[in-house]
Image (cartoon, rainbow, N blue to C red; front, side, top):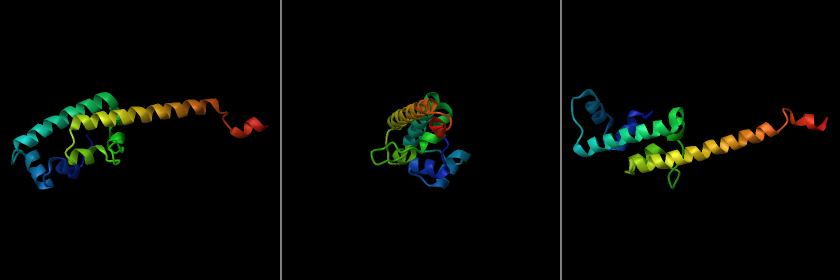
Length: 117
């Protein structure tokens, strides 16, 4: 999910060292963190299926009520799938706006000054 160590550690409410201990197999996460890992794996699959190559762009997109990003909302304890839904909705709206703007560009002359000649 293109997360930094800091983002993942914040998402689980642990230190970077604790996260590294999980990754290296020296320690196992608590049951509640194992559940959150599972939820994030489901969220990652859902984001990938919905947005494909656009995922990294929209993980930093402001989607929360106070313009929080995906990882900020996850770190605050939001349900990962709920945040995924917000990200996908925002991404689809943004991509639709881009398409609309591109279609307007197609209606304009190559060089706007050509229309005055």
